[in-house]
Length: 559
Image 1 (cartoon, helix red, strand yellow):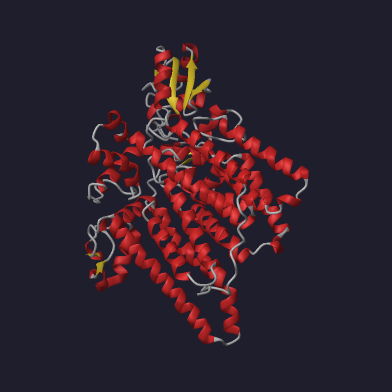
Image 2 (cartoon, rainbow, N blue to C red):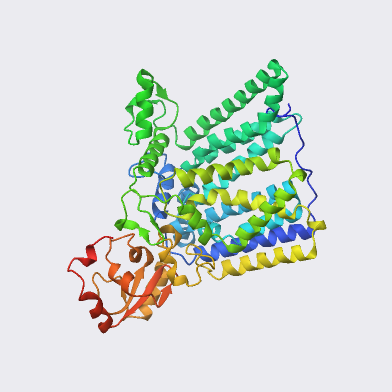
């Protein structure tokens, strides 16, 4: 069967992998594993890891109920799987090390390596071996990927599965000859599994529709203009069959993952919290009494996430504004643009810009509708969604989903590597070296990475906080500093003189209200511990000058 959406075209010809190329790819993957593992071994558990792990552990004991959880997903069962295997087969093996949350982080690293391989193979298929290695290098030295590749959370899983789902759909649209339904089935399974990673993956529904529409529109328009209504109807029907295949696999896999718990509960019987779901239930009228063929914990979690995200209760901070002292429910449309500007390596941003310019200049050499449109549609969708709609502005981790796609596209810069000038190749090599140096300069602290636009790393809290800077990962470093400096105090509960260490989140007013406003507005940090905690030294004289004008309740005031 040929492609449903347009006239069949062949997938770019695969070039045999040379020994040199294979060694380079293997070396890059090894570097990534070393960096990710070296980092995770030094970081304490972040704010959400135990709850993610706990939900995964519950699922492995056939309990999918939500309890107090909302955004925890079935993929977290992968992190708890080593402990479950040990529990069943060999209790106490390796002194219980395999039964810890920390060991579950290694599962995420393995999945991050699968994503690295996908980035490499996808870019290579589109633009050739040099492009594949370029995309892989960008991935390997991406600090924001490294930051989350060793955590028991779902951000990396969502990033992996989003890329895999779009890649699978691209293969379907590009397929020619027999076997189309086999390719479609693989894509449908991947799409369904992606829904277990994070609720962000639910956006794959409009994204894949957008990709299909853009890919098929010219062919369908030609058929309509020619009056070939039978062919037009045939293509639409076939597309409908593919959609039904995707929906069927979604129901099978999601029900299996959540053990079918609460499946066929009537929609009217849900304790819905979000205004969106409540509106849908009202619109359905008597139909709300029909059973829903989806596990109750899946829809319940989605409902809670939507309620939290749209309620405006999220604590937002950007460029010194917001936090508890800001306007309740306030959001910044520019939040993720600023996060990208400061948190994404400058070398990656420059290479992406070069790739865009080069692509426009060589546009006729590419097949945009078939190859680049799936990437562009996904990136543009998320760019619009995160800029204009999304209310949860807690860190760049939410937009990791676009990074692999951008790396694949940036690989197009080396599509004609053999004919590029030596000067161009040297420039690209220099930028990659700069990327590596910039990223490694933060090792093993990848969560608080900021690029060189922030020259003084002690000032990062003035731009972004929360999971961009301090997610609870630096506990060991803080404890080590306090042991070595017994005269230092950790986050004193009132203004005082001496040496003190304060979390970037609390200093910015994200937590504990404005307890440290007196410190933030009158003193500059003289150092840091693991970038996430700022060090201050306040003399008695300086403190006296500050507290004399202050009202008694200053520590509790808000901006």
